[in-house]
Image (tube, rainbow, N blue to C red; front, top):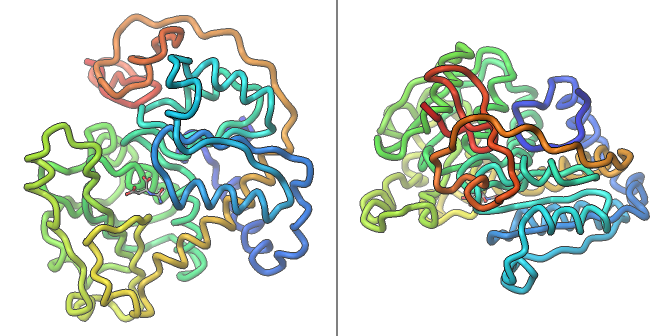
Length: 354
Ligand code: NCD
C-alpha cells in the first residue's frame, strides 16, 4: 500500500524512506526552490498534549513550503472540553484541511484518527506508544552525519518504557542492516514487552544493560532520553529514577571521537550543558533536520487526493486492558487485534491481550 498516513514507522518502506531523505536533502540544499511547493495547502495541527518542538517544526515546515496552518496546542480551549469525541473533531478538521497532524496522550489515537479522516493523518506522538516523525528526524541526522545507518552500534538510554521516540526509533533502525542496540535503562524502565517481542522476532542484535559508562566506548550513536515524568502513575517511581543517567563532558572522553550524541529534546538533566559545545553533540542540529524531513513528508502527503472514510471495521472479540488505549475513550471505535495466542495485541496501542 502506498504511503498515505504516517501512523507508525513500521509501515514505511525503504523506498519511501529513501525518497523522503532524498527530498529532504534537496530542500536543505535548495530551500528557495520549495517556497511555493505547498501553496494553497492547509494543514491542521491538533495537539491534545503539550509540545514545543514538534508543533513548531510542523508549522515552520508548512510555512516554508508556502502553505497555511490552523490548529490548537491547548485542547481546553476547544470543543474537546465540551465532550466532543476525537471522531467528530477529526471529521470536522478533515473537511477543512489537506492534512492533519495529531498528538494525543492516548495510545493508538493516531490510528483511530486515520479511520475518520478523508485526508492523510500524521502521528505526532500517541501517548507512550509511537512518534514516527521524530524517527524521521533521527534517521535523517544519522544518515547526514554517518552516510548511512547499516552496521552502527546504537545506545538508547533513559526511559525506554515510556519513551515513544525510543519505540519508533527501534522500528526505524530495524529496517537497516546489522544494527546493534544497547538498551540502557533501569530495570523498571526497560522496553515494553511488545517491543522486546519485536526485537526478538525480527532477529535484531540487542543487549539490555543498566550501566551507561560500560558500553559508551563501543557506541557510534548515543540516543539519550528524559525520564518521562508525566507518564508515571506512581510519583515515588519517578523520584527513584529521575537523574539516573547524566551524560557529562567528562564521560564523553570514554566515547569514540565520532560518536553522535542525539536527544529528541526537551532535555531535563540527562545531558549536562558542558556537552553542548562538543562537536559530537548533534541534538540541536537534529531538531533542524526534523523540520526539513517534515517538509518532505508534508509535500508528499498533502498532495494526495481526498479519500472517503472507509466503512467501520467489524468489532473483534476481546478487550484491550491498557487504560491509556484510545479504545477506552472513543465509544465508536471497533476493537481490533493482531497476532494469535500469547502474541495477540491491540491494533491501536500494541498492548498484549492474553
Ligand atoms: C519527545 C516527545 O514528545 O515524545 N519530544 C519531541 O517530540 N521532540 C520526547 C520527550 O518529550 O521526551
